[in-house]
Image (spheres, rainbow, N blue to C red):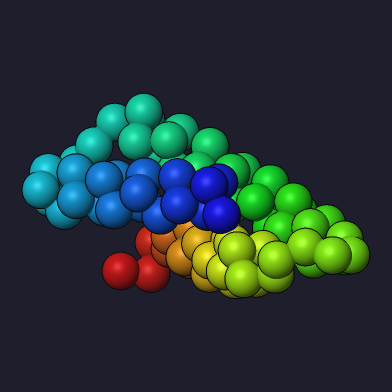
Length: 87
């Protein structure tokens, strides 16, 4: 859940900076997005591993896994649009 939350917060910050600058930003924000994508992937892996454990409270592993997959989808979409130039 912590990795997914970090990814969500960094997504909001990066998107705010990109929209404020009109899309003309440096490579640092792109690198921050890729690092955040890796945090989402790590959060999904840890979340899946924690769902397989017995006798654990399952709310936070489910929330973290779901949010991690959602953030992977968002970051993947942003990276796809960046490479293809759809917009």
